[in-house]
Length: 331
Image (cartoon, rainbow, N blue to C red):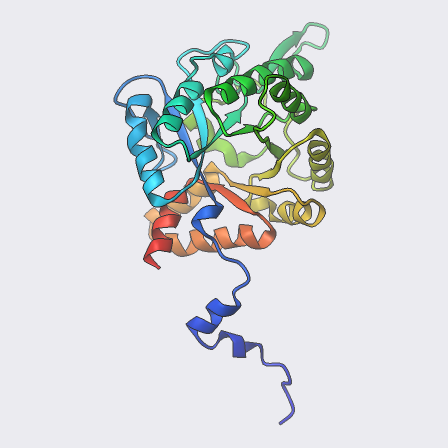
């Protein structure tokens, strides 16, 4: 019998053989774990829409850092929930701000753990937007001003670097933010600190649980004038090209699950390390389905992570990071 000539199933016949020819794999070194720190004492408060994810006060943070370290996770993404908010988000660039204080403590507890500081203003402004807001009397509407926002974002990035952040991760989507922050870091003597740009960040519905966690819901309007339209993919290339030209060291796609085509597009066009952000609602949906016994949580999570890698991501920001490492150790 001459047909079939090609038998692809030959390479699937055993567990060992499947392991041998596997094209993509997830390891602990691919993972970045997001953490939320807040003011107060003795706070370890679970975020209702994100089971297993917590707010930590500084006096409870060390226990989490110890667990992360013992698991072998090498990088965290740090978000701060401040005690004080104002129109310009001054707590974001305060020398004693929550992110700055947490960074100094983490570097004391584990100098080798990479601290990636999210650089934005939305958690720190009383209006919840990622920049300076101006009310235009003539147009009868509020607008987020681009260039004045850049000045505050540079101050924030420099203060985070001064506190010991290893990587600056600006997430604001203002035009020119990578260039402004790169120039500001260099002038302040932090030319060695890389910039992980939220290059392609969509105005997505997948951020709901995060906004609860970060207390960053806009108090009016939305973020569609500065975050990208989910319908657009070619625009993602323009955004990434701008960031490459401005000096970004990493590129990111956020969210990841509904935008794997965009991850693939960036992978095919750019050589910089590429980050996929497995965002809060992606996490919450899996958790909710698993709690109702509708899915196998571990199987679905690991398939999703492999999907990100297959699409071209070099690293993954995910709230599942600790679980993934435990599953990898078990297997």
